[in-house]
Length: 424
Ligand code: GTR
Image (cartoon, rainbow, N blue to C red; front, side):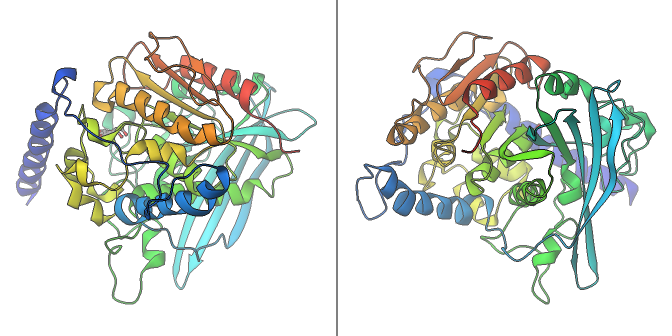
């Protein structure tokens, strides 16, 4: 039995690797493509102003992403109870206060716990806040002995002591270089993080996390146009936002949703759906995040739906190797964030995520910012590495690998300082 499982996982990984090596990394091999029109409605109407954008085109585009890409999110699931485990723990040598809050969801005999770890600056006003998921547990973001350990399923990482899908003390602080909490706090921002697997474990199994809460009797997985894991994660962010509106230390009009890689895809989708997020940061989010699918450079829709089918709704598989038939492309997802500030990043060695496709999507999305008389990106040629450019859309390509680093965070903070405005 054990060997059978090993063989199956070997075959699967070979398939994914084969697909990985098959993808195009040659700019000359990018096919000619036409992007779906941002500013022409389904019925052929020209979208010339914000009123038509908001009334006609924006809802049409949201619907297309719901039906064909990420899947519809049920409306009826709400927080049942909020448990504050810690209100103001002393953290970072007295620089910050640590708060740990559990959101509990209940339906029939089902219960789901989602834990938010917050570090807040010790200031008298309400703080603006960055919120983003982490990959392996809240305790991985800082070497802080008081962070509670998640009991949810976590992907094994034996080098960090994560085995049998449970975290241990060994992984405490293991991802702290991705979370420069001190820098964020010193800049006057709070930071909140949630383990993504509290909301929905990242595995092709719709039996855990929040999905079963939406099933009808006899249903065991979401329908063709119903939520995959990225939609579930986006939903979790909007529930965290519900909590933030009740936390008197947080300025809920200045919440910035941030995410790296697959979690960057979730951050974009959350910001597109929930306009309470005042700003969005997509870090190296790549295929079906910020990158244009039609360029077929690096990861493609075919590869991603094969390797990670559970991230999306089942309808997306119709477009595997048929990107040109998709009724949307990712510039349209970015445009849904207008007129709010949006920051997109790439990394020079992260060709898998198609840096140029991420940049071009951001340029195109600028058309909708234009309707609001805001400048999207101020350039149409990719900037050189480590040179941020920004209008109301910001962009940089960092020299280096697929990652989220202190350099990236410093740019998010600068951008937020310039572009985030408190509600009147
Ligand atoms: C990759 C996946 C990407 C990206 C990345 C990540 O394997 O193909 O789309 O999301 O994982 O999340 O780290």
